[in-house]
Image (cartoon, rainbow, N blue to C red; front, side, top):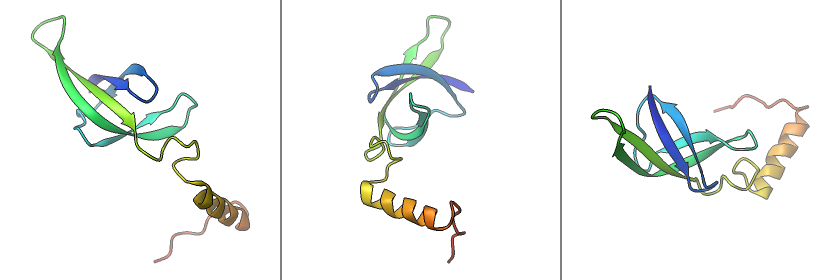
Length: 100
Protein backbone atom coordinates (compact mmCIF):
# COMPACT_ATOMS: atom_id res chain seq x y z
CA UNK A 1 0.00 0.00 0.00
CA UNK A 2 1.14 3.50 -0.85
CA UNK A 3 0.14 6.38 1.38
CA UNK A 4 -0.64 9.43 -0.74
CA UNK A 5 -1.56 12.93 0.31
CA UNK A 6 -4.71 13.94 -1.57
CA UNK A 7 -5.34 17.66 -1.91
CA UNK A 8 -9.02 18.26 -2.62
CA UNK A 9 -9.65 21.44 -4.62
CA UNK A 10 -13.43 21.17 -4.22
CA UNK A 11 -13.46 21.23 -0.41
CA UNK A 12 -10.08 22.96 0.06
CA UNK A 13 -8.77 20.23 2.36
CA UNK A 14 -6.21 17.45 2.32
CA UNK A 15 -6.00 13.91 3.63
CA UNK A 16 -3.61 10.98 3.56
CA UNK A 17 -5.16 7.94 1.88
CA UNK A 18 -3.72 4.50 1.11
CA UNK A 19 -3.79 3.27 -2.49
CA UNK A 20 -2.65 0.04 -4.13
CA UNK A 21 -1.24 2.07 -7.06
CA UNK A 22 -0.72 5.76 -7.77
CA UNK A 23 -3.65 7.05 -9.88
CA UNK A 24 -2.71 8.87 -13.08
CA UNK A 25 -3.81 12.28 -14.31
CA UNK A 26 -7.29 12.04 -15.83
CA UNK A 27 -8.31 8.94 -13.90
CA UNK A 28 -11.29 9.03 -11.59
CA UNK A 29 -11.37 8.02 -7.94
CA UNK A 30 -14.20 7.75 -5.41
CA UNK A 31 -13.85 9.68 -2.16
CA UNK A 32 -16.18 10.03 0.79
CA UNK A 33 -17.74 13.46 1.17
CA UNK A 34 -17.94 15.28 4.53
CA UNK A 35 -21.64 14.29 4.67
CA UNK A 36 -20.71 10.58 4.39
CA UNK A 37 -21.81 10.10 0.76
CA UNK A 38 -19.41 8.89 -1.94
CA UNK A 39 -18.59 11.08 -4.94
CA UNK A 40 -16.39 10.85 -8.03
CA UNK A 41 -13.28 12.98 -8.33
CA UNK A 42 -10.94 13.55 -11.26
CA UNK A 43 -7.18 13.49 -10.73
CA UNK A 44 -5.93 16.76 -12.16
CA UNK A 45 -2.29 16.61 -11.04
CA UNK A 46 0.22 14.08 -9.68
CA UNK A 47 3.63 15.03 -8.38
CA UNK A 48 6.37 13.65 -6.15
CA UNK A 49 8.33 15.36 -3.41
CA UNK A 50 11.41 14.06 -1.66
CA UNK A 51 10.58 12.86 1.85
CA UNK A 52 12.35 14.17 4.94
CA UNK A 53 13.87 10.72 5.51
CA UNK A 54 16.16 8.78 3.17
CA UNK A 55 16.07 8.81 -0.59
CA UNK A 56 12.29 8.36 -0.86
CA UNK A 57 9.90 10.27 -3.11
CA UNK A 58 6.34 10.69 -1.81
CA UNK A 59 3.41 10.97 -4.27
CA UNK A 60 0.80 13.74 -4.02
CA UNK A 61 -2.55 14.03 -5.82
CA UNK A 62 -4.58 17.10 -6.67
CA UNK A 63 -8.26 16.22 -7.25
CA UNK A 64 -11.44 18.04 -8.23
CA UNK A 65 -15.03 16.78 -8.06
CA UNK A 66 -16.25 15.33 -11.36
CA UNK A 67 -18.74 17.72 -13.04
CA UNK A 68 -22.32 16.73 -12.21
CA UNK A 69 -21.43 15.12 -8.87
CA UNK A 70 -21.86 18.18 -6.67
CA UNK A 71 -25.60 18.69 -6.96
CA UNK A 72 -26.32 16.64 -3.84
CA UNK A 73 -28.51 14.13 -5.66
CA UNK A 74 -25.81 11.62 -6.56
CA UNK A 75 -25.12 13.23 -9.93
CA UNK A 76 -28.70 13.02 -11.18
CA UNK A 77 -30.51 16.12 -12.32
CA UNK A 78 -34.06 16.86 -11.16
CA UNK A 79 -35.98 15.18 -14.03
CA UNK A 80 -33.92 11.99 -13.92
CA UNK A 81 -34.22 11.86 -10.13
CA UNK A 82 -38.01 12.25 -10.31
CA UNK A 83 -38.34 9.46 -12.91
CA UNK A 84 -36.05 7.16 -10.93
CA UNK A 85 -37.79 7.85 -7.62
CA UNK A 86 -41.29 7.40 -9.10
CA UNK A 87 -40.26 4.09 -10.69
CA UNK A 88 -38.71 2.95 -7.43
CA UNK A 89 -41.88 3.79 -5.48
CA UNK A 90 -44.10 2.10 -8.09
CA UNK A 91 -42.40 -1.22 -7.40
CA UNK A 92 -42.89 -1.01 -3.65
CA UNK A 93 -39.32 0.08 -3.07
CA UNK A 94 -37.82 -2.80 -5.08
CA UNK A 95 -36.26 -2.43 -8.50
CA UNK A 96 -36.72 -4.97 -11.27
CA UNK A 97 -33.60 -6.75 -12.53
CA UNK A 98 -32.06 -5.32 -15.66
CA UNK A 99 -33.46 -6.96 -18.80
CA UNK A 100 -31.65 -7.19 -22.13
